[in-house]
Amino acid sequence: MTGEITSQSGDGLERQTPPEDAPAEPAVCSYCGARFADDELLALHRGLEHESELTEAEREAYVEAVASEREDVKLFRLKALVALLVLYFGFIFVYAFVL
Image 1: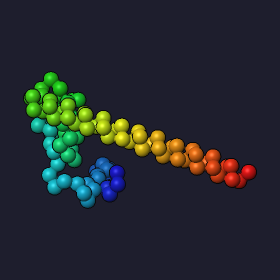
Image 2: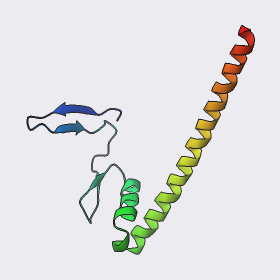
Image 3: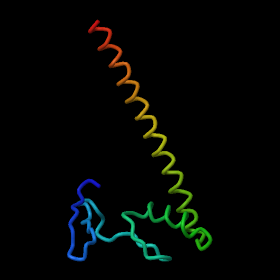
Image 4: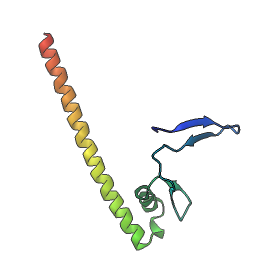
């Protein structure tokens, strides 16, 4: 939620302003009206929530978005593993030099 400013309105509901790098016009689901920051998130939503109603183009967009998401998750896992290994061996070296 970086860049978001939360404010309390008079009706007790919490309102959030969009981040500065948000697109000018959000992607809107034609089935339920939900709004998303980009088309990839919209394709993922449609594939998960409206699977039986999708057109062929929307289904292809969903498959591409899932593939992209998988690649992003793989990259994140690799980066997290490297960071944990560096941290682990860093603590081992510090411990070895302190003794």
